[in-house]
Image 1 (tube, one colour):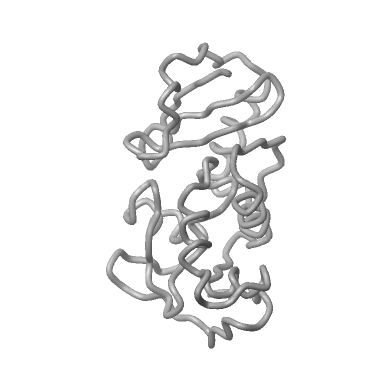
Image 2: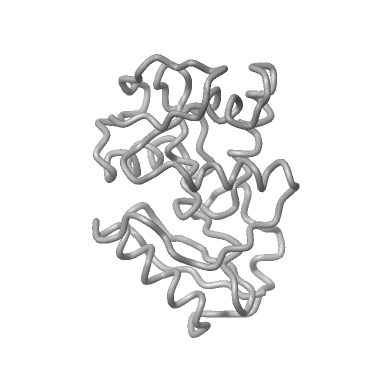
Length: 182
């Protein structure tokens, strides 16, 4: 495993990777950073890390809306299912935990499990967990911190502020995953 940290507009971003796949993208101070990250080999010159850094920089510059990286996030099959759905939420769109729960064919009682899986996403931004908000549009939970979540949503065209709700269309939690635009 390899690691590389680089500065971005929201603070340092730690990338972790195998020789061929991105396995993590973490903001400094994020509690989900792998405990062995400091022991990983430096990988600034590794092809996958160079490409990932270039794509993150293009995203922050407003020039990239869809990441095209080989990614291998480690997680349970349930987490993998949730993370795949996150990748379907396009740039500038949002979804709710309830919508994702319904899309998985689960009942409302499973929304907390979906929220936990979203919160354990190891590849911030490229797997866009920041695009998931509470049912009424509230900015809830983000491993990188709510101010970063709000900044990422503003970068994508939403008037997000911590402590405020984004306008949401009706949330039919038992329906299909309807990705909601601002």
